[in-house]
Length: 463
Image (cartoon, rainbow, N blue to C red; front, side):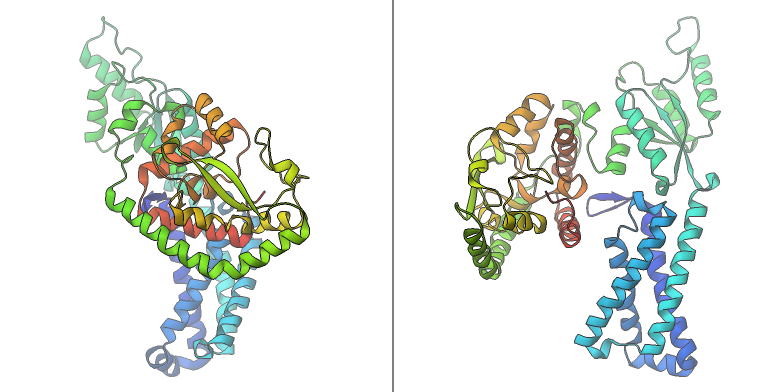
């Protein structure tokens, strides 16, 4: 795994993206040579910003491939989906570059060069993806991993590692404990050590992931140190799970781990940065969005009876209650009173304008005022209504930890998990929120905002 912006990415996926950017550059260099010849191509590259023009095209391709989920684990290993989405990417890049060239003609490479390069890129990307899938599936290029331990964490790790082939990891065994004679008074310590080493080496692992629920008196430290000194990697199961999934393993979480693990402490400079960004960018957003908000308010008033702004109590930092502002998207009679009922995709409570606002997320524009006031940040755990928060607090362990930071208009759970309805959904949401609180940083905030822009542009996850 490669760690960027306080988040982990599969190294093979990162290398795939870098290699595909290189393929785009090579394809257009080849197209330039084929169209102009070596001498004229050299002149265009050296004196007419040829490399910059090709770089713009490569960035456009990689950007669109990311936005079409071609680096997502669920799409990466599906040949049919890859073919469909590469075609979609090609069409989108053509439209984007056509608009860009119309707006700024000096960026054009030339019609002949673009056509040849575009055909080469399409063929090279599809061929390279096919080769990548073939090589990625070969066992000889996979890291052999042995899981040590039992329980939910061990089972979750096996499931995640087996389903994510782009990780380049193959689970070769699952041992609930090391050494069947461990703790037997009739067997010497040396014999126990020899048995353990023999058992482990029979799997020929490159790495051992320790996912034992209870390690006191059961973890064979001497054997693991011996294996580590011989070149076998030893990793903690919770750390591997966190890196692979982007969430904290709540099923095996211990208070001591929360206390002693790195993170879960927001530095004062980080708090100052988030508050300054909230004030500056929310004020700018309010000024720019005022005409649009006026039109939306007018449309809501014409469409249905009731107030334009919907006010709802939410739980903020340290469990404090604040009033969240949104454009009203439902009928008044169904928004007021009674227990909170989450909105469904086909909910009959939506007004005609409200359904459109929810689909485009424009109903959340008034939250800029919450951010400016200091109730929220742009990025943080999404706040819930009090009755929903109290229910989660009673049924989900460590739920109160979400309240240690200010909530946000978007968050790590929103860009990874989406909409939540059941208690199981909220438990998984907490796992993502705890990951954010542990790894809170400027880089992670920027990554979340980038992912949020992708969700908004593609209209995903709205209810």
